[in-house]
Length: 167
Image (cartoon, rainbow, N blue to C red):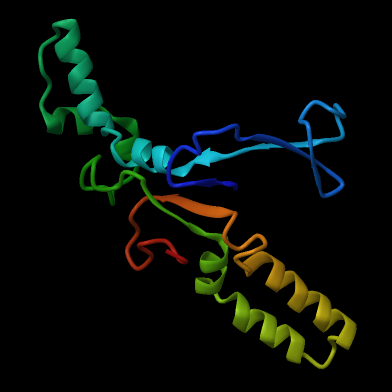
């Protein structure tokens, strides 16, 4: 989506109609409305989040209830019981990665190689090849969509797949 690694500090609500920026309320039902995402705040919110175990313990302390041991909480947690591969609640919490530019993300995911392969395919016409290349350029070029759009991933650690592809 649109946005940066922090607040834009300005008006971030925009409307688009037929590839032209217009007032968001100028054509109700016809205008695509968008807003900048504060990716930095989103990443921080995900990464500083406390785990379920710690949250339950805080609630017990605040309400004056007696403390329950960590092993008791894990044994009473149906989510933990259903996943025997989880060693504890905090080791598999989701983590945020990015933001990175759309152009960089697509490059790291192999868009150039995929486009080359498609263009070299004998069944791809010259006209189709030009359209494919032009679309890739629009998605990746810094002065078009490549730098303006950002990608943020939220993922839990998985063996062999961490950090997430593209990051």
